[in-house]
Length: 179
Ligand code: PNS
Image (cartoon, rainbow, N blue to C red; front, side):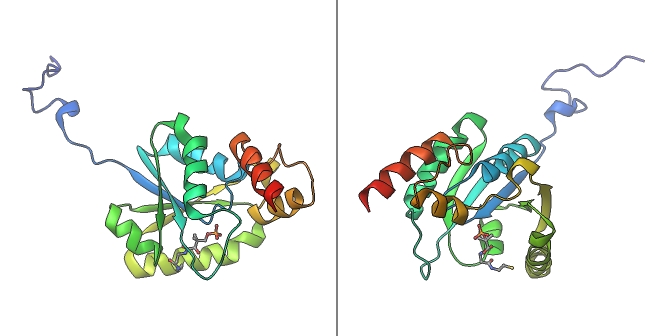
């Protein structure tokens, strides 16, 4: 039997059927982005057509980096992936997902200690809106890594160049020099 021809006029051609974009969000504070975060975003960007990195605006918590600085750093670090959009959000993550028609949240799990709270959030988010949460096990090389530890080590002059992307090393040095 002949296979249907691959022409745009042929409705049997699977390439003519519109497939919805598969979108996911990697949410967080990213103050600043670490190699652990970047590893998760990179892996999500290979699984989904379009990945949103959503930076939480938390008015009650002053970070080392402003939200604009965090976004700009993440953009610089993820530009090579080609399918990553970086934005801020405030309020509920599920509302952001609804606005952007994002059905999936992607989170990294560093250790069992992350699991309790992450599971609660995943169940709450699913109950609120049906948004699914997918967990990616963090590369064990980064299982101890957090933005808070990076800031503490850098503030006391420790070397963090193996823990954060180069643009963050640069901006940490510039910021901590000014204080
Ligand atoms: O990097 P963080 O600080 O661990 O990220 C936590 C974040 C931003 C993913 C989480 O606090 C969040 O989703 N905040 C938005 C408010 C919200 O939706 N709260 C209900 C969670 S069940």
